[in-house]
Length: 317
Image (cartoon, rainbow, N blue to C red):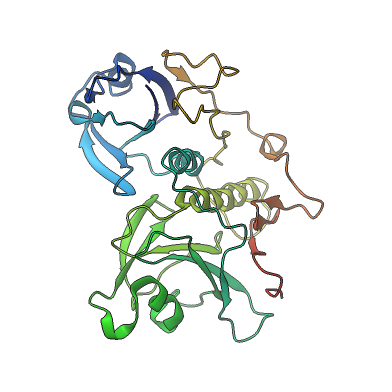
């Protein structure tokens, strides 16, 4: 079988296809190109994405192993000092696809918790303990110290169950600044960045939320557009970081996990993917609609970087 490996280094993203024999049960990632990106130091600390744990695990180059199973898989690595993995959402969508963990609902069940429809909104995507599609809640935009989940019992009940059966009062939220799941008390304020109006929340025991990669990709799209506006000196959000560029979801043969026949340059040779040139023209998406929105299916993101929740016909301003 073939395995896709993606490695976010301190300078760029590197990827490769490599093949394992079926009888091999375990493989150390001792590829020369991997060591080269770590200056040949086997003790280099890394983060490796755990498909079972649904988050990053700390490790070192010499300890990275791949378990070979019946299904195709992908290996996602990053240097410990990498804060933003460009295209992580698209890679996790591929992982969800390979593991049959996609969100199949055309329209998510949505509950609008705003006192008035005209208020600003934050979309909270929630996964409970069960392995089912997430549920979306629309709440007023956080003000002051941030969003406190305990102010919205419907969200807490969905994530943790009814209060009478609740043992732990903590959930995990997706930290878009460092891209990992962080444990958070339901009574502790959550600081949602000014550039985002999507928040991901999961039950602390639900390690593989259905469709997680898709929604992480949506948050990345908000980040990208905020950086694009900052570079053009438009809008209130400013950043000192370079605007992230996005690469398409890899073309993958779902049966083998390897490249499709029409995508032949990805044989076992490591390929460094050059970053696209800077400039707004490179940031345009083919599926931009007439209203300047990028279509995510039932979600859309406006040109000003604000994500809209159009999951049902009765949510409007």
